[in-house]
Image (cartoon, rainbow, N blue to C red; front, side, top):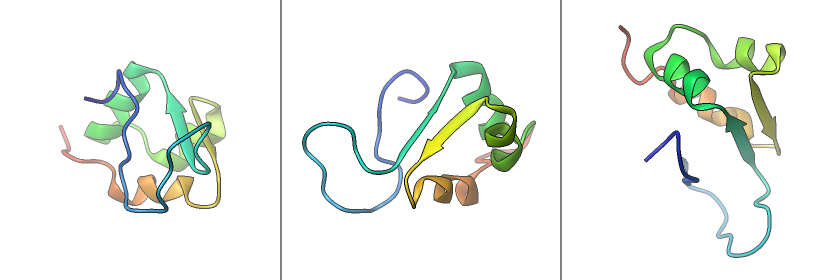
Length: 69
């Protein structure tokens, strides 16, 4: 369960070894803030709170927030 493990969030190419081609990394607090909409994905990337690499990594931003508080 995020934010404490790695998950494949969106459908994409099959990957079995090494670093996958599209990676989003952040700390648990930032992830929870993204989930509830207290910060936006682009702003978190710009501030360095989220590291997103790969051509499709930013697609996760379209799915956030999951629930607004």
